[in-house]
Image (cartoon, rainbow, N blue to C red; front, side, top):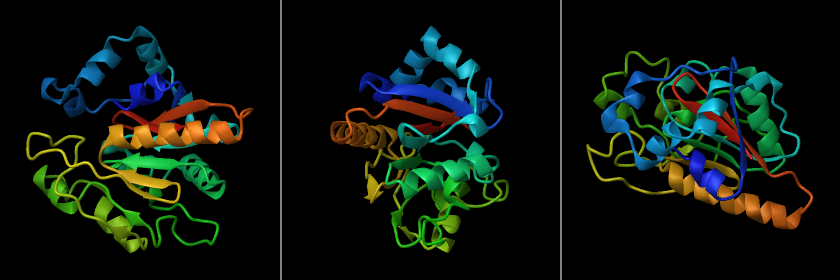
Length: 231
């Protein structure tokens, strides 16, 4: 639940999803053994729950005046946000204006169709990471998901940095490995806390450079949980 890393750092967070309203939740993400202190805090936060129940329609979101965009993990982005034209446009707009773009776990799926200003895939030539093929095999969904995040990032020209395990869903399989991959302002990481801390730092730096800049964070939602975030 990176939500509070942003909130506690003073960012204003707006939740958005492709269809708006209450996004569907992956039942496995809501299982007792998947809970953390942060998710418990989120569930007990009436204001946060109200925001989640009333997410903005993603196509109504404008990048104007915002500092960054962030996509939490979950399988959902492989089906919706990876193909969502509004999401693609927002990512490309943020990247073109040198604002941070972040994605964790399965969320790098959102880079499937995104392009840079040179018309090459946005991840081309960048060091990237994400949910691995071996992790997908471990959960038995290799033949279920529409594409594999690792394969897609490689085919788009990214230099894939494989990690032993991600910290989103598999802390019981092996120890959490923290390793933030940041190339320019494009971030792909498996540790949501590390990445959101980095986003918060960059947001503060941007605010110091542009004191009149609006400091609101927008977090979108995909089919599993709250999804992209815009700061």
